[in-house]
Length: 319
Image 1 (cartoon, rainbow, N blue to C red):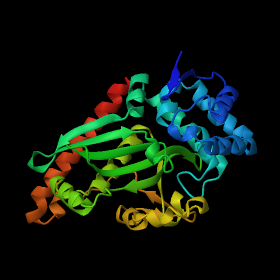
Image 2: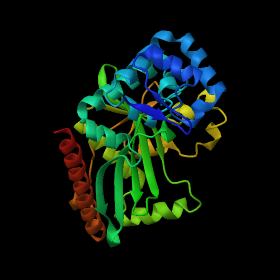
Image 3: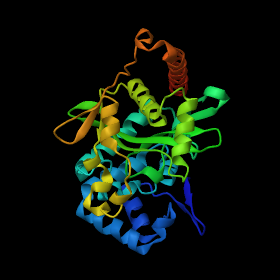
């Protein structure tokens, strides 16, 4: 039987949603150190009572999932995800629940068990490794991490050969307006003291392609493989940290989402979401000034190679 281990005990995983609720509430099951806190557990216990049906459905997702253990270990706040703002400051608790259920339903059917395990692992599922200019190594990872769990269930992260994060985009799969959709809840670059230098060097080694643009294009391709119809992205005012509960965190949101989405061809709708083009538009080489044409050609060759590796990685895992 699967177990969750912490520094004191190893307890059996409850088989029912109610059993999981009780084990988490009283502290018999502590998949992460914040479940050690009586205050955290009491908030989960009391908020669950305020929305019992939705919480039951969410816990049912966990207890019935073939990777119950791995999912709970990797996303330890998943049992209380609907109790707080998530992905967008505008989503209701019901919309949050439906998005989470749909996301895991889609990914579970799309990926085989081993691929899903890799996705839930610390390093994630490797989409591709490639060499940029001057033989600089880059890695694209498809990961699920609780570090970014307020902004979505999955992320695509670009790292350099040393493991330094250069860009990460976080999202959830869902139904919106009855169409299979992606909502992007977060887009971040490095936050080191030398972040600007890291991004500039990476952009140079990617033949002028910004790291954030690369992870967006990677997401667009993954969405295509998942037969997604629409890609939406939160605006500045809809970022989850703009929610009242996170008002103190909002001041730490430095990225200008609106400008990036508009630069990427996005158009804002009446609800405050940007609609992102699902097709990547390229300049024709003939329209590029001759002195820049070689760089554009190498950039296109690079992105074509990334796309092919990603397609092979995901379809191979799914076959």
